[in-house]
Image (cartoon, rainbow, N blue to C red; front, side, top):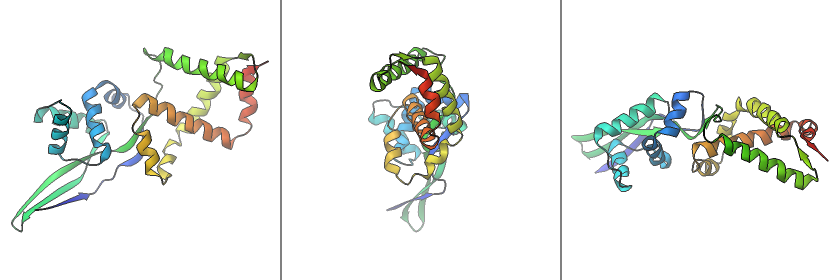
Length: 213
């Protein structure tokens, strides 16, 4: 018996998500999230996916798994990547569909605040301000000022987020892919923020106005 995987559609490194339904699929459906995690290591057949659910003691029926796949495909998070060709003999060949993620990392280009985690976001900015004051010997931090600049820079750079697809180091994206959706968003937002500031030194003059002695 010989097995060959023929990949027609390859996953991207980073895919930007603008659709709220896709975001809900990523965040709210733990089984869809689990299926996406199974696909992190590469394309799988339906039977591979079924076996993967069994290995984590979450056995599902065929109908249920197809439901997950259809929802993920509709959300453009999963695609049919190609075929697995199993050759038993010249007259006995079996072909199976391979499923894969549409991207190794999903970046949500939407504001995730406004829910029960908004307080956590506020904590991030508060900590950033307090630490920066200590490091730069300031006494006061205008959080609203800093948040405004941070938001403006992030929005400008989100347009170019898929530039990360040009990074020739899959190991980095493999590492990012181990984080959940919200953590990934903060990581990529911060990377873009730093990249923008690095290319626009004048931003420092605006940002420093958020701090005072």
